Length: 236
Image (cartoon, rainbow, N blue to C red):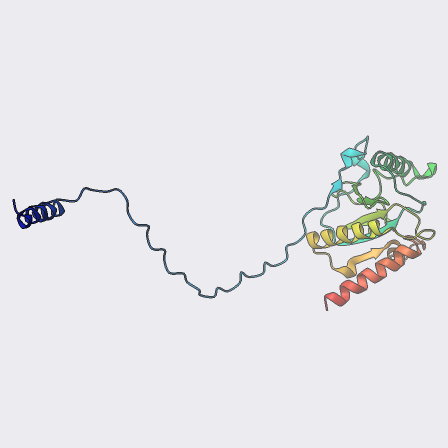
């Protein structure tokens, strides 16, 4: 066989093999990623401030060893004002059990008859109390009118808040003023009470022509004056 004949045969075989049907394969090229978009998006709207929820408050059941004497209580109805007091006794930071014992002693004194030196009240006089560490305690249930402002007319629809301490003799701890401000904010927003309906005890006494008092003490009175002035300015 000549050299040229052999080359012709090999070329024929290569062409024949090259024309054979391709075998199926499983590989596929990766898809082309979509073209990125660069349009500018508007920022999400800033949410409106929410009305503050409930504060952390020690419930009455954590300290009281007796229920209110309902026969001596009047219903509160919807509160329309708030009165701020001090207890009138010098106070320092106490443990929670010590505060609970102090509140029980306050209640025991206030439910005594007037002839025995008490108030003749059906329960502790105030709806909320704030200890020197700033902890807020539930006092008289809100469904009942308080016994803190001077007489039944002054107490009507009036939330009573008492800070433990004597603020003629001591400055109000920052923890107490911070908790007082938060509590007032919560109550005024919940019951739609304007800032001009937040009073101190001495102011209520003057409003109703009752005997004067130094409550809530010089330093707490000054704080309340500043706080209400700030709120009035902010709400102009």
